[in-house]
Amino acid sequence: MDRDRTVELIRTGYPWAARLRRGAAAVPTRLLGRRAVVVGGPEGVRRFYDPRLRRRGAFPAPVKLVLFGPGTVHGLDDGEHHLRKALFLGVITPETVADLGERAGREWASRIERWADRDRVVLFDEAVEVLTASVLPWAGVPVDAQELPRLAQQLATVLDGFARPGPAYARAVRARLQVGRWAKGLVRGTRAGRIQPPPGTALHAAAAARDPKGKLLPERVAATTLLNVVRPTVAVAWFVAFAGKALDEHPEWRERIAGGDEAALDAFAQEVRRLYPFVPVLAARARAAQDVLGVPLPRGGLVVLDVHGTDHDPAHWPDPDRFDPTRFLRGAVEPDALVPQGGGDVATGHRCPGEGVTLTMIAVAARALAALPARFPSQDLDYDLSRIPTRPRGGVVLRHPGTMRRWSI
Image 1 (cartoon, helix red, strand yellow):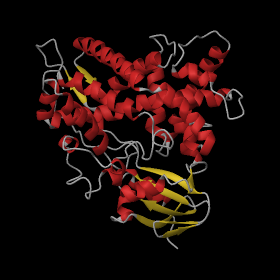
Image 2 (cartoon, one colour):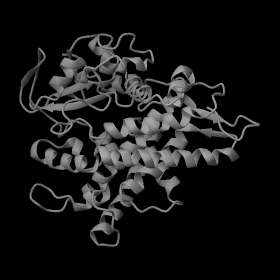
Image 3 (tube, one colour):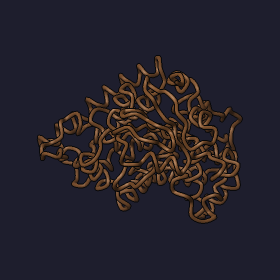
Image 4 (cartoon, helix red, strand yellow):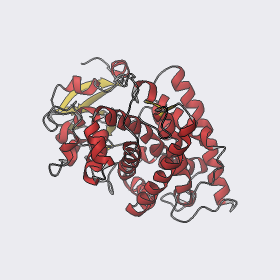
């Protein structure tokens, strides 16, 4: 029997599953003390979203409770999952995503104007605040401008430390408790009528959400539901930092975007999401003993989807570690080969309903940054694949160009 590879996953990070698979669709292993099979590529993606698997109990509790929270949709199955998923699909529509994009565009314009009096900013930090300032009003959350920096920092701290043992994890736990109390207060205030978010917003929907028996969701679960709209939007700051890196290293794409090439902008956002990692793997559990692409797995065994390896599979992405948005200008892409936010059907399965939000937020930021004068200070833009989640070292520093009143990156 293969040895348990949990510590190896923690130490190796994003490349772990692909190194274990070595191009195979499925390989047996042990993880978290259980029999497991690691799958990848389109065939592995399709098998991972097979109804013979379930999500309840698949994520380790220390990760699930900090990143997702109690009662999260990510750990639900069947009718309960469909009911909760419908809430997110009702909140995140093409129309509301467009509205969020317009809000973010205004926030970036306002933020860049304020940079004129500063000689140095960190793009990642700025993105965290811009995204928080955009998503909270959009979600129906009343928030004072003085509160925004603190809330933004707490949300980013949760994301930065949920998978990093040690002090970073301890800070993430503390921040999770803080934002959890804050979100429960919003739900409580909404249910009592003290807060009146517009119908259709995330806060309104979360506060009114009911379980399959028709009862209001427990306060902490409703708060988790709200946070699972807000938190992933703030997580786009990691992609925005990588977008800054890509704009610096590939000025030809900067010029195309600045020139108003919308097809290039869309392709750029997709390639940022494909190339630069956030999620390394996803997990599910076997409802009953079964064969997983030739690997026998007992009931309760884990099926682990190699997200990073699938998005970097040379069989579907030639020269996969090269930044090349033209991949998305050559025609349709195999859906099960591009899974940075999961695979399967978004309406009936576990695919993330917020993909449109992510792509829109990357595109809005890239458009704003590409319009700035092109000069980048010397810095280390490399990133550590053993760090989850990873981002460019230093967060991508922007410096004032001196005699000009506008900024450059």
